[in-house]
Amino acid sequence: MNPGQVKITLKPGKEQSVKRFHPWIFSGAIARFAGKPAEGEWVSVYSSADEFLAAGHYQIGSIAVRVLTFTDVEPDDNFWKNKIESAWKLRQSLGFNDNNETNVFRLLHGEGDGLPGLIVDFYNGTAVMQSHSVGMFLIRDLLAKVLKEVLGDRLKAVYDKSAKTLPFKADISPVDEYILGEQRETKVTEYGLKFKVDWQEGQKTGFFIDQRENRLLVQQYSRNRDVLNMFCYTGGFSFYAMKGSARMVHSVDASASAIEITRQNVELNFPGDSRHEAFVADAFDFMKNIKDQYDLIILDPPAFAKHRDTLPQALKGYKRINTRAFEQIRSGGVLFTFSCSQVVTKDQFREAVFSAAAIAKRNVRILHQLTQPADHPVNIYHPEGEYLKGLVLFVE
Image 1 (tube, one colour):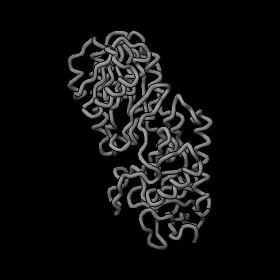
Image 2 (image 1 turned 135 degrees about the vertical axis):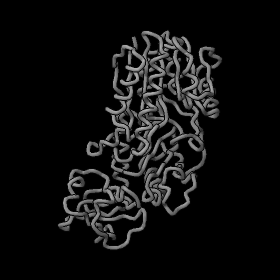
Image 3 (image 1 turned 180 degrees about the vertical axis):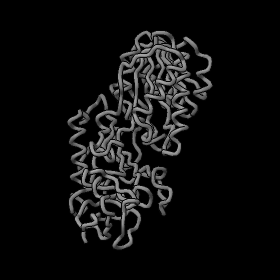
Image 4 (image 1 turned 30 degrees about the vertical axis):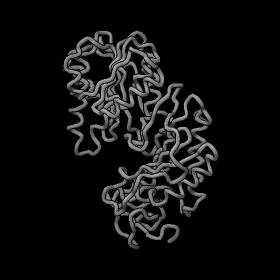
């Protein structure tokens, strides 16, 4: 029964999604266990006809197995090294190899890189790791060692930031800490712009790398425009707008600490530039009375829905905030609007935005339909991985 000591047998007919290489096996598909798996343990999965299907990490919950291989192999050091090397080769082909203009990117993207449950972002020599499964967390030291072998001197430190991403039912007590090297410079460069990143206290791994190409698009639309960046976090869209010769840029976030980093980042790139102002404010309150003040508005809110049971409320939230933007934006303005909720489909998001446009009674044209960048690849067998949705809209 090696390499997975515990054998899981599926119910009849439940092997079809596995044979289509979907990387999740749900608990409802399981008929029985041979052995009692511990959370995070490597398990083998078989059909009801006793045919080997896949192997991966077991987890208590709806997703019972995160599949890491569809062949019967031993998950030794070379197994992990081959996966990480494959991901690194893709990033090299995308131009992230020793790139002084952009030294921040996603190195490992979960299912998109055949590593469900693992995210690793690269920040100018520091890899910030987030485990979303106990199985990945338990081998974090091995993963750090392999990352160092693959990246060599490019990698100076690995910071594990899994305390808030692991399943809350897991019987472990993770602590965010350096597992390789020590704390280093927290400034990174993206398309020549400098950013101060706080991966220890900030959201996600410290920076929203997935909006890189969309920030660049904002730069292209910003010339001589008055720009409002809502939910600005550390201000990424704002600096690109300034670089694109915006006339005025206002950054708004409910977090005072995020606004402080935004101000520091502005000073890093545009010292003493009076075009920028930052405000600590609730988004819905700020957007009540700003009619015709802005002709480029960016809405990049945090995920309104993290679980399916909150989806109806989330869609109402997207409709409400976009209605407010449509009502306030100047005629001839451009609206960049996003959803990063995995449970919200492209069609659902578009319907919420379209409903908002109709409520506001504005004529609207779609200029671009946006998604995540190439260093956040989507496994073709796992469409759920396409989580970032965006629309660029021209508002008459």
